[in-house]
Length: 339
Image (cartoon, rainbow, N blue to C red; front, side):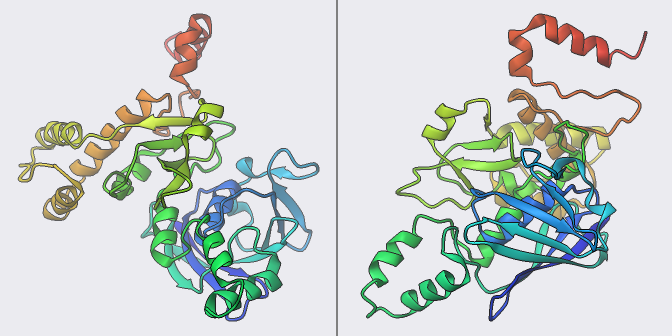
């Protein structure tokens, strides 16, 4: 799959807060928005907007007036234009996105270069950001301890966290209102299932993000954070996913036989999975992960879009379907191409 290489720079920073990222070429502007959020370590809690090209095309959330819906605009349609992104119309963070070339090496968004930590949300703009950096650098400052404690309420902004945060975003591309997951993406996201975590894993259905259930006060998460309060307030948004290495190993065993491959290692943890992928450089393991991921996603009401263009593919949320047999039958009829 082709990817675009993008330079992403936070305007007005010195030294420059800059990232270089790879993003699949079939991404939407919503995917670009999520990648910018992740590569800066922001929490996506404020409004944002894109201004694109000399004609200043406005692209953003569908809720905004007079903008094109970012979920339905392909990045490829504007890739060689200057792209300006504004986040938080209070602090007014302005980001410039520049096209830097193509690559065929990346199936999922990936951080390639990282320069300087970005400001946290609600830092007070560029001047506030400078003041916070100065306070943190001076233990004798009377506000040092207070600001240091306040900073603990935000996700880490280190390269390691940013790199992982980008990799755990399930980009969707322009799907004409549907939400799907490409199996190649899942195959490339092996580490999503191998990173140690302290709690239960969830998929943020709205934002396509792998999350971890954490105590938002006492713990730090390497993944996106979701709390019990959030899940209770919006239960349809967060879908619990349970990953079992035994189940994945059984799937791999089955697929290895299909491919006529000898599976030499039992999958018991992340390290064994990675060792297996290095030992047997064949596509059977990618298929194993893809099919296993399909089972996991199916169990929480998502589906994998295999791109069968001849089918009028419809998003099926199984939790809703089970409650509404009539709606289920109408969906099945729409999918039935035998008539």
